[in-house]
Length: 81
Image (cartoon, rainbow, N blue to C red; front, side, top):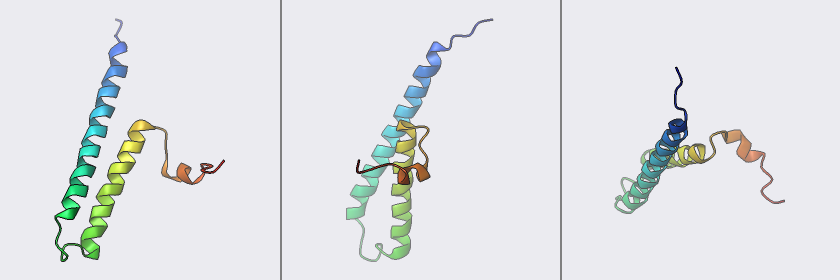
C-alpha cells in the first residue's frame, strides 16, 4: 500500500508557520505588556521571567526557521568575515 508523502512537507510548513506566528504575537504581547507594568512589577524576579519568556520565544522562532540550529553554534559563526 502506497502512502502519499507529498502532504507531509506541506503539513510541516503549516505547523512551522503557525508556531512562528504564535511566537511573534507572543513577543508583541510581551513588548506591549512591558509598557503597562508598574515600577513594583519591574523587579528582578518578574523581569527575569519576562526575559526568559522573550528568549524562549526567539529561540523557538530560530529553531523553526533553522531546524538544525543549536545554541552553541551561534558562537562558532564568523560574524565579521
